[in-house]
Length: 175
Image (tube, rainbow, N blue to C red; front, side):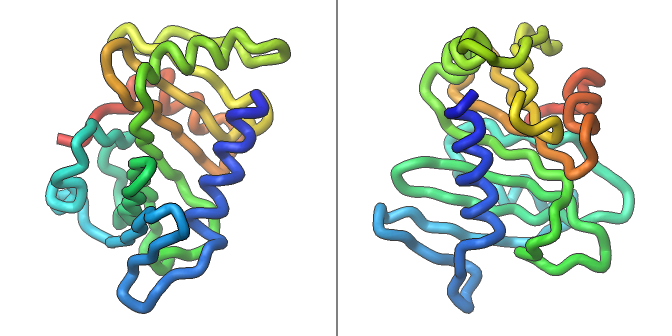
């Protein structure tokens, strides 16, 4: 669970605390590149084009725009954040977010995380996937599917909502 807690801390730092350049992109010492774009639902496919791995979301929601944050370089991550009409891009305010992380053997990694001492209980997800609540944070759930090198994180500022969305089958690849 320590690995998951560290991943959540890194996510928060990368998305909301780290600085950015005026052009909406930034790099770091490891050569990672971050870009942020706010789009409508019908523009999501263009925003994630060329990712090289499936990118997930929890479906179209009313009265929101979608902030797509791409981090490329040593690691490849794409976040789809659901922004209400009054929210600005890269706001530090927490909103429903689905992160897709390119991870080799993501299913096996998630299974091993579930087996760690003091870990959360995993549960089956439609499509032969595995769901793993973040024991350190009831607002976050990890999901992985066999044969797909992507670990998905569903985060909601409302405790329990991420788990409900995953259990309901709302999590799907974009496109």
